[in-house]
Length: 401
Image (cartoon, rainbow, N blue to C red; front, side, top):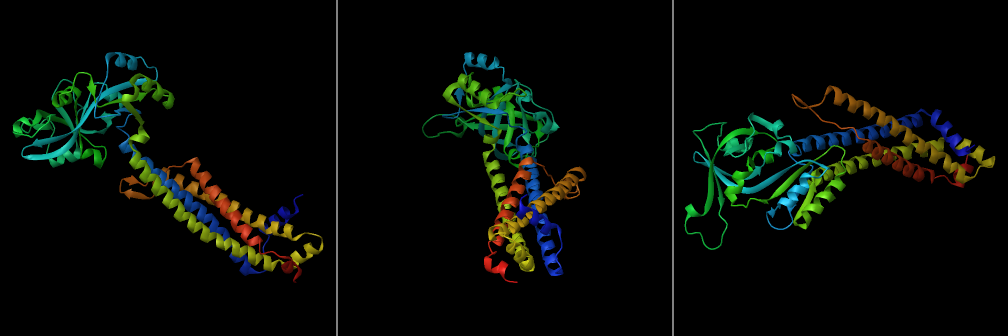
């Protein structure tokens, strides 16, 4: 039998004859429970916000995107196209031409990013799900689909033939511009749809057929700025990435969804880390109560400690008693806190009691890694607090009655 652990369990279950010490112990335990619960709820809330934020930015992001390693565009040869079509890992891919343009309509103008897409684009991303008004464009036409922000700034409707859109892009070349008429390539188009994704994309993007973008930029038939891929279900992304890279070579850089949104991921991860550190600091303060309750327990149990010391128990074993007691208090309190936090997050996920807007409940996501993080944090802090408190045990203390 582990004698120190046995005594620690007895001390943890039994009440002291001094009500003040019992009160301090309860306060310390409640502090651990609430600290663990709060940390898990906050981490679950931030995980929910992260998923909620990314679902709007990644809905039009492909599984993989090939971008030129040098310059703005690259050439896709017929042989490379044939090999891409034969890849077992790829469900579909779309050839893209993307460039900043200047658009005008009815004496209003704005800058935008023109994204020319081919007929396979709808199979690569769920673009249909973000069309609020109108419909998706058809190839071999001068149709556009614009974001809500651009639609508002230019007062664009859907299929309004009385308000055509003029799209301008500077002509490539060298030397000074002698005439504004010859400085730009332009095309007249009509808006047939309005999409809503997020504020950034709504205010800056317009979609067009790939041939329109190709003619506007004077691109060659096999010249593109990107290729977007949708992978088959269950495919290893790393293997698919390596297979695509072996076909396209060093002229492209392949990026996955996380790399395409690295700025958003970094921001959300930094905020998550900052909140974790703040709540860990609160937990450290709460564990001072654990140290205080253990020291008060030592003083209350001096007579018992003296008895077991005279029976042959060493000072080291007596220190272990309170070390185990504090560690058990922390682990048990942390486990209770995690259970309570799980119940709260499940209730929020099911019933949406806390609302961001009248129709939008605060998002929460329950993740195993957050369980592990909180439990390890509570356990480590509990062990450290118990070690600090048990170090106060000395031979002089246990001999003094």
